[in-house]
Image (tube, rainbow, N blue to C red):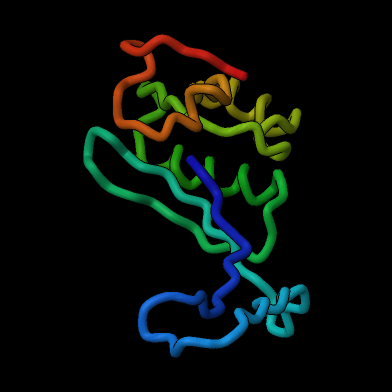
Length: 130
């Protein structure tokens, strides 16, 4: 499971842009007049399906709501393994208690494994965390 957001949609210099004498800085867009949206998503490896919820906030209540929706998709006897990053709402007490009561295992892999740029499985390559 992973979250994404807020998404800042603005142009980036690249193909199709005219040449300039001096490159201008792109302005920071700190003001979001219409708010932002956050995407919570989970990939079912067995069915090869992506499930997602679009939320206005990224609190532990939103994470818990999404986990409950995922739990309803599978029989209670089937154990779910959710791989999460170290975002603080994932470590909230209510999320952990709910997971224990509902046959869901929350897995927090070491950060060194999450940031590998290559596609080689982490268990086959030597790990060096700096």
